[in-house]
Image (tube, rainbow, N blue to C red; front, side):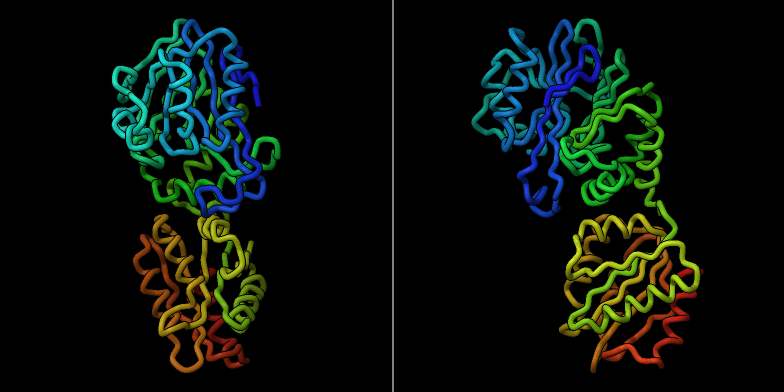
Length: 387
């Protein structure tokens, strides 16, 4: 796709609608876009490349936009292969072009492209460095661990454009459109979620810039109501709940724990919970379950005991939350077991390592199936969760 962003900045990215799993783990039924841009000033700068899967299509876009011109610079903001996969091919095509990247990225380039000669063809930049293209100047800001250590972002002070690397990206090919927040949220918490502090540091840098357009490496170019997107990123990176509500996430072997989870959701609704979402961890998209855990203010986990531990889908879910720095939530626990319930202890051992969480004192133990005698404990737990 070729599209003018401003008079001198052209989008040359490509959609990938054939991919089944992004990063070999995230389902992307609407595909994904690999965004790349060209700045056509007195000197020409390419802003990132694309995944090697779409190299041919991207190179055709690039050649079409350049015409008889040749690029002076390739600005590499992020070395992950979905953005940097075509570096070697474009360097071979334009041997006089220089790669502009952070010092760490320059050092890492040979790890990915060991058959390419970079000597004399790179410019490493640091915080606050600039690059003149003639009529405009690019300003570089380092963004380490958003979400790799070599990441930087670029600000074009003439058109007031922030090239934000993976920041403000979303799942979904551009040709498929779609509302921004849902897939941007799933993308953020699963890709960048661990790195809230580095994202906060980047937002502070961005606050000092006059930004009219945000050009991310995935998803749509953002041109209106930028405060909406920035406010969400601020909230997400502070690990603050976005929505008052409860996620009831369950892992059930034969359906008995599922019955308890659904009943507990009904109890929460009857007690006035504003929003209750139920997730079957054995069948749902794990990335979406993680997204919802971060979105809502409260979490209840319900799981069957298994091999003197907890049923693996729940262990997998809690592990995902742990590595993404899940915090600042109120959590309730429900376990099920037929002779030696162990799920509650196993879940609590993981949950107690989360930062700044409140765990309900009542832990409900179900022996095999939900019975009328279990209802008072579920009622108490609901009161504590909603307190």
